[in-house]
Amino acid sequence: MRTKTELVYTGRYTDWTREAILAEVEKQMKPSRFQHVLRVEACSIALAKKYGASLEACSLAALLHDFAKEHDAKSMKKIVLSQALDSEMTGYGSEIMHGPVGAYHAEKVFGIMDRAILDAIRQHTIGGEVMTLIGKVLFIADYIEPGRTFTGVDEARRLAEISLDEAAYFKIEKTIIHLVKKELPIYPGTIHVYNSWIQRKVGNSE
Ligand SMILES: [Fe+2]
Ligand SMILES: [Fe+2]
Image (cartoon, rainbow, N blue to C red; front, top):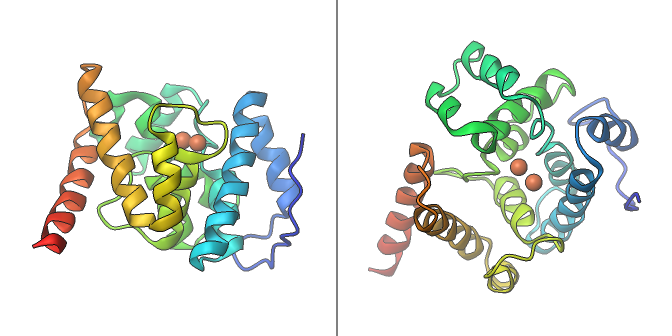
C-alpha cells in the first residue's frame, strides 16, 4: 500500500522524485518497516502543517530516517569509524547507529545537503541537545505514528497536539526510564540529550 500525498518535490533538497526515493527506501527494509516509514511521513506532514515546518523537508527526513535500520552492523560500524562519528556508539548496536548512518546515506545516495534534514535523520532515535523544528517533527512522528501501541503513546499524542517540546521531552524521559527498568546500558549521548532538556525545563520553571 502506498500512501497518497499531494506533495511534489521542488528539487530544492534533492534531484530524486518522491516516487524514486520510495522505490529505493523500499529495497532497504522488510515490508512492515516500509509501512512504518510511510506512516511516519504522513504523521510528519501533519505535524509540519500544524507547526509551520517545511512539508518537503519533513517528508524527506521521514522517508529516509530508517534507511539504514536493517543494514548489517558491520557496514554501519565501518561508516561510523570512516566518518569519524562517535566511535562509542558502535558498542550500542544498530538502534543507536542507524540514525547517524542513515544521515550519511541521505547525503551520499540522495545528495541531500540540507543540515536540518540531515540532523533530523541523525538525531531521530536519541534526540539532540539542540533540535530544529524539522528534527522535532521527525522525532515525535516516529514515536506517535498510528502503528505505535506502547504504554504512554496516547499521552505522547496528546502532548504533540499542544507542544512539540513537551512531546519531545516526554519521549526523551520515557526512553531513559524504559532502558533503566529493563536494565539495559544507556548510550552516553542519550544521557547528554536528557541532561540538556531537563536543564532547560528546570531553568524555564525557575
Ligand atoms: Fe529509526
Ligand atoms: Fe522509525
